[in-house]
Image (cartoon, rainbow, N blue to C red; front, side, top):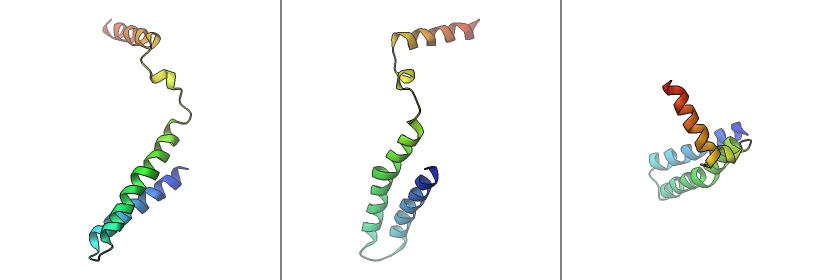
Length: 78
């Protein structure tokens, strides 16, 4: 999966650069497709790939997590 994301990222960046470097009437379309590819395809795939095995409760500010954070801060001060 990470290779697919990397290939799509390179294709999107390549499309953006190609759009800047050529001097035709379709240059803006290449830039636009590159930006759409980055923000509607590559970024969501990357986010899903990085967060698929994570537990969301570990990242929420619940009472238990706040207590753990305070306990860790107190342990660092000592």
